[in-house]
Length: 190
Image (cartoon, rainbow, N blue to C red; front, side, top):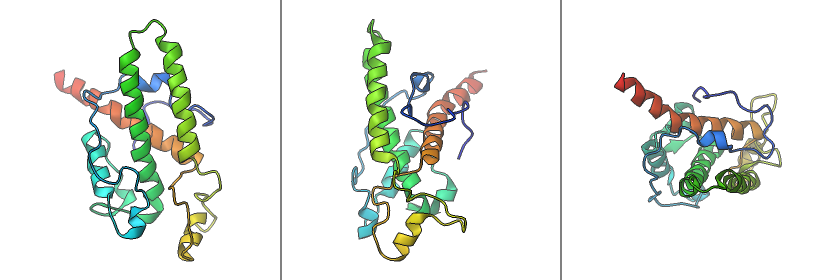
């Protein structure tokens, strides 16, 4: 993963996205996802691969998927699927939140309203992206709990949720990439 722009909070409680995260974003146009499988994250289990379309969409926003997550073009390594899916989903939350922010930035109650929007988005992310049952826990032999379920052909983290630490890293990674283009653009102008 890339270097974070700033040090993250020591604990991820209910604050996943903050007002300051949305400062200095370099997203001139909020492009909608037009690929297939918007919500079909289990499609891989059925032999359908929407990952390539999702990866292309993320790339169009300046977010590149780390090579360590891949096993080939358009193919995500099994142990990294939760990270990839969470990156895609959280990026969507960030884009939708930024769209809302842009419509209310001139409102006199902007900070209060936007704080409420962020609280709702944070609750949604924590409810639907956070692994609360320890499936992503790394065991001493460097395998994850979910790997044992997969090996037995059982359901293992079907929603591809991530640990608190992984969620924190994914959010930092996304914002790093959504802000970094601005620094590259300003260097070109110098």
